[in-house]
Length: 563
Image 1 (cartoon, rainbow, N blue to C red):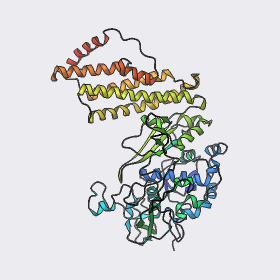
Image 2 (image 1 turned 90 degrees about the vertical axis):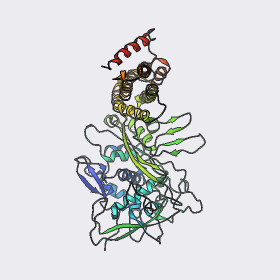
Image 3 (image 1 turned 90 degrees about the horizontal axis):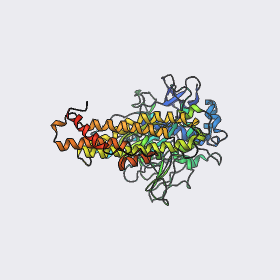
């Protein structure tokens, strides 16, 4: 007889170690060989599973070890992690909540046996076409049939990923605690050797929230240990109804996996592992738990009005980049929408700023991940990183003010570029404007990271206090913005053969480029807005007639190409 599958004692999580080799470990082995060949990342081969695995570990540590994440004890485990044996001991009291099959409570599944028709296990995958889509033969882009058999390990992670990120699933099939496709943000601290990978433990422990009121009651944290709080009559579940840590373990979908024997030794379609018991189907029922009002520790939030609740941000099309700094890294009380970073980022910054590990601060990165959902349809899974290069607590306010100005200046520079493209191409909207915008942010991304690193190294000796920006950094950054805007403009506005264009069209293109250059130097209303955003002093008065002379010169050059 095959024993029940315990997610705490089985080696079921695929990971990558520092030497580049894969491994399969139980959760407590996260800190195994941490000084020699540490675990550095989950390795399912799917970005959504990897992201969900990080959340699984953080949630597990929050429940089992959150009381140790205070100001006094957290630094000790960050510097010298607990042994796998110590983590095993900490996880042991939660054992009955982490059994996937068997006769007792089942991890992530409804407490009741669910009768009725079965659903193919592929429907656990968020990107899979829905049952109605398959029935109507409309699954043209994400085809059916790719996943038919899952090992218990693969089924456990597919189930947890769905419950954690669940989109709308039709009438009565609830979304996750944070709604469909929530955005998750975490900090990755730096390493003393900048070329060495960072142990996964440090990123996860950095995000674990402190639990001040003692160990939680498992029945209030893990919804599958008690009868489901069904929502067929409109009942919602808030943080006052259960333990707030249920945010990590929400169960919006009522699901029971159908576990069956695997006599033919069919490998798992996701992991390739052969399990004596597999999952090919599951049963489901509508009206699972309907969550409301949770502030999830791993998601940034926004608020449209001061008296309204904070709502979690969701994944959006495109790459997460430094233009999202305000709202993901630091808060912002905007005119229309207030934004605040996730508690994991806010508290993690505070922990790192107070920590004496300079390398951990200087190499810090932010990772943002989440599904880009169009209601029930998964368009993409977005995962991006951006450098933060943190400084010490004494320099953080000048650092923060400088970086905010850098981001505001970049938005002004992008606007100048768009205005110039509109003038040169005689268009109001469309693909070329969007292309120019995308190229501008891509071209300045690497320069942003380098500039942050230079700023972090310069500030300790700069003697700045309070919200005083580092002007030399801002001036250099303006140069990067000018260079990128000019390069993108010249790529999208060809002037090498102006003789083939009407004179008026050629003149507008030349005029637009000159206007772009002058604005990026701080002249005119657009240039004034740029310098104001950057916090730079206005430039010297423009010499009288300089623009006209430059325009004539540029026109002459344009007749024979730019040269």
